[in-house]
Amino acid sequence: MNAEFPAARPRRLRRTASMRRLVAGTRLHPADLILPVFVKEGVADPQPVASMPGVVQHTRDSLRKAVHEAAEAGVGGVILFGIPLHKDARGSAADDPQGVVQLALADLASEIGDALVLMTDTCLDEYTDHGHCGLLTDSGEVDNDATLERYASAAVAQARAGSRVIAPSGMMDGQVGAIRRALDAEGFADVPILAYSAKYASAFYGPFRDAAECAPQFGDRSAYQQDPAGPVGEALREVRLDLAEGADAVMVKPALPYLDILRQVRDTVEVPVAAYQVSGEYAMIEAAAANGWIDRERTIMESLVAIRRAGADMILTYWATEVARRLRA
Image 1 (cartoon, rainbow, N blue to C red):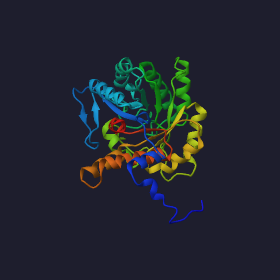
Image 2 (image 1 turned 120 degrees about the vertical axis):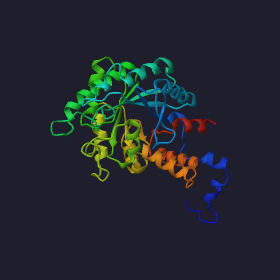
Image 3 (image 1 turned 180 degrees about the vertical axis):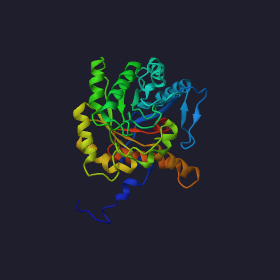
Image 4 (image 1 turned 30 degrees about the horizontal axis):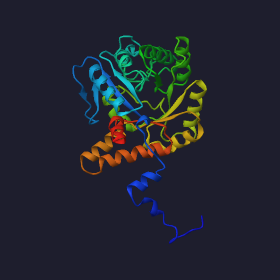
């Protein structure tokens, strides 16, 4: 391009809202959005999450209402996290047919049909009394290989209850392969796996641990989640391993602090890529908006556009229903 000012005036394509909409290079659609939801056993009413204004721990009935609202708004999917009444060292509720997630899935699968995609987080941290994502050795380390059997069992239980996508998030080596083999062996070869492939040991998860009641009772998760300052290329290695084990789609978590990783993943793989706009990202915007420091709606939309522009095909966000309604207005 040889033209220079005054012949070249990029502002010509920015002058009006209709012009900006016409030439937009990044677009959001309600079906791109996935709503994370929490369902808690043993509560009579939805329980607000103090650190995440607008987010609740649902009862089974209030969850049904929330998922119906998401479907009506055009949201692409929901992903379920469960908080059982009783926790133990092995996370027994994770694969219990009468566990809260399995019962909630049965409720939803019979009512929602194909209006949106029912997904389940497959991990143990919500179900263990120690708050870690796997079984522990006598010395308190997370036992990678023993944990794989629990993930496989939980995934089968979720698929049997009606989950349409299994999303393993524990960052155990070999988790995707173990789950794929178990699903196939139990007649669920058609159920896809969305792998949390690049999941970082992030400080942005704090409010989620309030919502899911899964804060580690000792130590942290740095021994199995990725180091934010880890080796260049580590995320891509994790992605490649998950794909080799049978993952159908991959995820980067968190989203905004890792847009560079998201872009690298999108440029490398030929499968759908998801990004999780995590609880800390949500809470910071809500808190700043509540103090009048930022324009809430504009900031929400700008953050989601940034994630989409970086390469996400799907975005997990607690604003999914709200934003979907806005996009359809």
